[in-house]
Length: 336
Image (cartoon, rainbow, N blue to C red):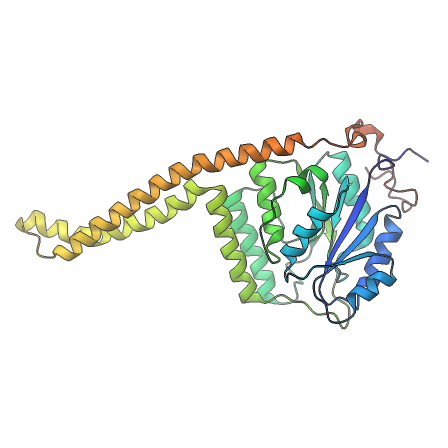
């Protein structure tokens, strides 16, 4: 059998869970079969249905995270666990554990820092029409604001290098964490890849925790905050332009009257328009200054990222890529 590039690599499978007792056992067993040498970690986020017990019985390392929210769980996972390659998935059974092998292989052969398992057919079967529409709109908005690197920013099935994980600040509290991961990669211009995978349905007895409008509002707010932090010039320019248009709207009739009569009869309107114009200029100036600050922060993050050494096994020539584990599935070993 061909030498595997993962023989000297530590692979960690991370499964954040909240009330997934109906599925977590099968998910853990699936990853154990696909990546027999990987360490499987289940972080239970205050489940009340026996999720932790089922994961433990299936052979996973179980830790409890008391702060509610996927972002809190992912931040704790990334801080706690040291590995060379990280795979993160959901515990609801919608992502096939068998595809983890392809994610790892793509990460190795393309020397990427993140591989996103994009969900095939998610727009046609997203549980509710509101979720499908939201997926389309938010992915379009992401490409408009942050660039065309990703087509499915909400996918929870990803593989990471250690350099990505240990340079990722992770400030989100909820499931907006996937968006933050994508923005981090786009901001630092990290090598990333996408791999289209099948997206399954939840089995009977397993229910989604997403709320179309509440969670959609959280994501929209997250977009605004990430734009403010990573692209402050564009963010403040949009607000500045809004104030300027409002100022010109109030100012136009006053100026028209002044040029006709030489008088300003609506002095409060003129004062308001002048104040709005001044606010517009101040916002634009703030955007220029903060843009320089954001560039400096991005440079510091990039330097920290470059300071994290890649494992020696990841530096091997690309032609040495072999099966991901000694129990690779037939037909998959030479896919790379």
